Image (tube, rainbow, N blue to C red):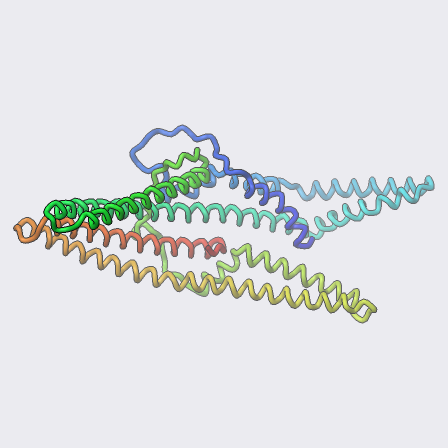
Length: 398
């Protein structure tokens, strides 16, 4: 059976699941704890258990795997015999027209019967399962990306609030200087407007975070309230990470990729069409049909080669990014260590009366900023490694 038949099988499964409205399952009763509502380690399991889309896809896989091909073959055999008997009876009674009307039904059933005997139908259904499983992996990948983005946005919100606190200190100092006649009201008003703009941006960020959390809650089967406490991303020491092997990993990614596999099915269909056209039209009056099929076959080969090339290029880009993200993270770690020594020195100087309290607060802010940059660099590296894992294991390139 050609690829278009297999695609028809999947249309009901995938489209129905992916277009299902984002309804949340009934939230399960859980005991209140002081820990996070959701951690990275349990994310995939929660999505698999709670996502309505994933559950729909799982049921579709179950319906395919429940097929008894031997029983189906026997059932089709009986139907074919019944049609043949009916046609014979109609012919014997002089009703040849009615007998001929059953030819199309017989041919359709016979095609399915032959596909089962040849194993073609089993292969098509296996391909359908693979496509549905790829859909599940895509949902998991989307959930993981959403989780990482949320952790990053919450860190940005924390940085923004810290910046707002520093702005408040500057504003307080500026107002005192205004009272002493050192600065104008306009300078104070300008800083007050900056503060108002900052507060507005932070409120917008809070709204975005709540929206994304609602989306994540739907993925794990909870009511989308926008209130969800996330655990931190795993640290370097907690990860099982081995240095990537480009050639081996690329081969694994290409083998796992549904996109490339589907492209190969399209190529096979185009080749069959070309062979049929070469048999039916070469040297005939309708030679143009042969020429059209030849160009279509050439285009299909080029399209497949392009798909493979795009995949390999994207994978190479992802592979190369790992080393860069790692060196950036190591650099930020070194900068963090340096800022810690600066703070220690400043604190000692403050205790001895050598620097002001404002200088101490500035050193603390600088350390917090360095900490934030190091954590941001780690999130970038973690995200790149996670994307690499998705590529190697499931053939998914973000």
